Amino acid sequence: MNDSREHQRQALLGFLRSIQKAGRPVTDLTDSDSLVASGLIDSLAILQIVTWLETTCGIDFAVRGVAPEELATIGGILGVIDQESGRSPA
Amino acid sequence: MLMQLQVGSLIEPFSGRRWVPEEVHRQTALRIGRFQALGVRPGDRVFLPFGNRLEFFAELLAIWRSGACAVPVDARLTAFEVSNLVRAATPVLAIADEATPAEVTAALTEAGVRVLATTETGASPGAAGDLRLDDDALILFTSGSTGDPKGVVHTHRSLRARWTGLHDHLPGAAFARSLCMLPTHFGHGLICNSLFPWLSGQDLFITPPFRPDLVARIGAVIDEHAITFLSSVPAIWKLALRLARPPQRGSLQRVHVGSAPLSAAAWEDIRRWTGTRQVCNAYGITETGSWVAGLADADVPAEDGLIGTGWGAVIKVLSSDDTTELPAPELECGPGESGYVWLNTPALMKGYFRRDDLTARAVAGGWFQTGDIGCLDERGRLLLRGRERDEINKGGMKIYPADIDAVVERHAAATDVCAFALEDPIYGQSVGMAVVLGDASDAAIASLHAWMKSHLAEHKLPARWWLLAEIPRTSRGKINREAVRTACAARPALDLPALLARAGGA
Image (cartoon, rainbow over all chains, first blue to last red):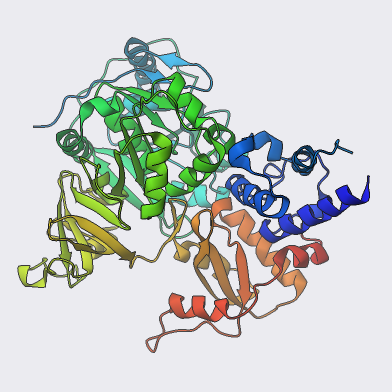
């Protein structure tokens, strides 16, 4: 994994810690674990993830569109960041 | 004159399943036969810990035509909460589906309630008995799931009065193809968004509730099924406005937003997205059969808190909230003057189930004291200005702090507690909790957290905790939730995720 992606991952984990429900450390999750099914966040918290991606990564979902399943996992969110920054997923 | 009920078609747009009225009647008859075979009698109560699918509506009609009373139950409740409701309502039977959590089914069975799958109908249709208008039809538990449950009882008469009131005030054609994305265990979703159009012979499109992946497709669903009407809550609209493409075909004729305050800005956003000016803030309370006021013609300038006029209800704003005396004319506030909102409607509940004490505290001579603060403008339109009721409105779902306090107080580590409303960017409000602990060790806090998880439904769990030395109280010893909120706002919340990780309580 390159430095930039690791940086994005740490930033994402830090954000998820700030909105997560208590009871499950975010570090326990793999990239493919569902954030909602694992109990880490509420289903509607996807809106907070969208807002975070817009403000910290400059992604314009009004233009790009969004499929909630893309944002269902840590790997999925990092994949969206990669796509928008023109990188290939690591 | 009460309206004649006549079902329309039921459609699940995401699964593609559809029942035309003849199939609804067949499915209902099979369930009536099943209830007769099981010995369900008039006056019995039947729990429905499932919903938002075709079979739910056939169960509801079959229960009613058997003379029994339906009790839709939120399947997200914990086993503890379900057991409490069983003790309060003593159901003879529960009907579930494959989505009903195993712990809910187990709690019902353990409490001696037989649980059947909704698909277990048997093969012999039954004939409907006479339906009596003043029989209990529906009980919706709104609070007290952890202590003394508060169940709103509606009779067939009060429900029909609600639908008749809506029928008289709203344009029927707008409801021809209605979409419900709200849960069917709460009044807004069930009585008004679903049953009002469907039992007026209109087609009802029903989806699983509060699913972001489905909300993201709402524009496409509206177009594909030529949806004319839908109702929702502001939190869902926040999601839809961000995630879903707007409908393109102009089928929507009317949109209601309810169960939580709607700002003028959000109102205009929804108008732009839906393509119709007929968007209104529908004021509803479970006790009045949900939607009780709004704008029949909603093409007016959006305004914070604007509701409109009564739909089969008389609205008064009084300077008093005292239900020990009849509302008197001299108590009425003038135009623009804020006071307590009272309602008089034939759709008013029969009362709280086996809780005459609570009914007496809410109703005076047929007038219902809503607990809301508002005013009437020069045109007699209601504007809501606030809420005096002690509740947390999380995206339209009402959570009662006393339910949370009652659970926490029973844990050995807690000596005092106060749950309260926190501002939330998505839900409008979420749950905060101030707690005084006799033992504030990581292990004790982790134990309290585990205790709460096993006793409170997920959506009631506090998002933030504060540890205080004492809970601020009034001079009369009552908890002052506003003072608690202020005290907590001035200090950082407990980092519960980190603490639980340390304590191994994950």
